Amino acid sequence: MRIVIAEDSVLLRAGLTKLLADGGFDVVDAVADAEQLLRAVAEHRPDLALIDVRMPPTHTDEGIRAALVIRNQFPAVAVLVLSQYVEERYATDLLSVRTSGVGYLLKDRVAHVSDFLAALRRVAAGGTALDPEVVAQLLVRHRQDPMDRLTPRELEVLRLMAEGRSNHGIVDTLKVSHSAVEKYITSILSKLDLPPTDTDHRRVLAVLRFLRI
Amino acid sequence: MLSALWPARTWRATLHALAGLPLGVAAFALTCGLPVGAGYSAIWSLLYASGDDLALTTLFVVLTVTATLSLPRVVRGLSAVQRRRFRALLDVEIPPSHRWWRQFGYHVLSLFIGVSGAAAVAVCWSATLLAWAEPAYLVLAAPALVAAPWMARVVARADTAAARALLGPSRNEELSVRVQTLSRSRAEVVAATDAERRRIERDLHDGAQQRLVSLAMNLGMARANLTDLPAPARQAIVDAHDEATQALAELREFVRGLHPAVLDDRGLDAALSGIAARAPVPVRVAVSVPDRCPPVVEAVAYFVVSEALTNIARHAHASRAQVTVDRVADRLRVVVTDDGRGGATPGGGTGLRGLAQRAASVDGTFALHSPAGGPTTVTVELPCGS
Image 1 (cartoon, rainbow over the protein chains, first blue to last red):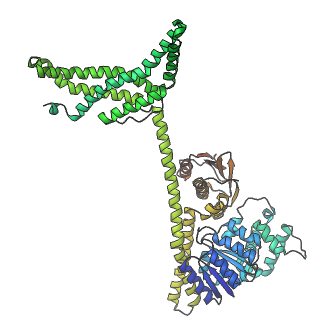
Image 2: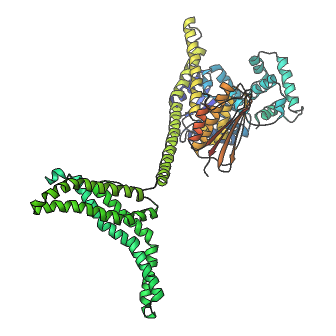
């Protein structure tokens, strides 16, 4: 899998390159700012771009803005954004374009190598990876909604779905049976008024409603 | 002998008293004599003069009007000259005042101070000179010689007191200048503190945090790859990895608390989700602020919410909290409510005092409503200059 890295810290750029190479990824380019990133993506057309949020010149949200450009101009390139602190507003920006092939994680998560590489593969394969902290932040926005009808356990399941986990991943995390998870999800979908149809992906709609995007 | 008895200071006080005479006369003439004299002449001409004296009458009227209208300017010019006399001869600085009628009072008084002061000093002085010419008068001259320096200083002191009271700023003016100075210096201190926080946040973000991420990542790689090490070595790596990730999480909390970067580029609404999400009790956030406030005010609002939520977590025994931020005219209103046990007091060492101080640092207000049994509402209003 071909990856472009954008990270302004030399130390981390080298570290991430090594981490990904060891994990069997092909790092085709590693750059230090958003401008170079956009050039590298246009040139290499990688499967995934791994992007730091704060980069030169202003050290604010360059990475998010570059990620949005990539998502609009290169829909085939998945985007995983890393940051020292995650912010709900950046997440809604990222997810507003499309909810597939996108990830937003705390930089700390790279320390848990196998989880991080799994998230990377999930995003590259068109899935999502949202940091639990992002999800927690999205929940504090004010609203009156059908979410209040969900039980705490159902909310927990929905939260894991929002993080991008599959049923299998939810089973592993909550230490419950497959059939229990399926029952929770059916209940969630009915409480959120999402009847089965052929045209919509109900699971995605439930997550979108949960995240209020 | 003269220089021993009369030090330079006394000479200068004497000169000051003498210079006060012509200045006092001129000031009185310009401020009182001219307008009153011209006015009297004008009235007299208008009442009694025959038509032949039309030119003279016109002149008196014009002079009266001119002298009266230019009185404030004349007064200020004279005050400047008098201030220079005090500065040059007595080293006394009389700060400027904007109230010209008080200065006018000094110029009226200056005639009397000038005449009596110069006379008193001149009398002492001339007695001394008399003894010089005719030693028989020494009996008379000796006390005068001793009294002269004292007299010069008494005159200088009296004149200085009058000038300070009338030429200098009034108590109100002094206070308003002081308030202005203090407000400006406080705003500078608040801005400097804010800038310093941003700088430290940036330094830690670019330095220690990156390094720690790198360290944790390397330990993570070691933990994942070095599976065939002896158990103690492996345990050491596992412990080090756990410690590093823990340190990273703690540092992140601290650094974001210093100054959230998202506050600068996305504003208060975006920044508040972060602290609300980390609060141990569920928090709802509702922010409706169409126009952004100055960065320092946003920073204070952010820290007010942060401290209020910390306080709720520590003391309130609440099950949920609500943060509402809106704009009321030109003020930013921050309301934090919880459903806890209430009974909070600003002085109870609960962090509410710090919250009130933060609000006050930008001229904001702080109100606490916390009846026993709850709920507690903290309302902070901050000026959001438009």
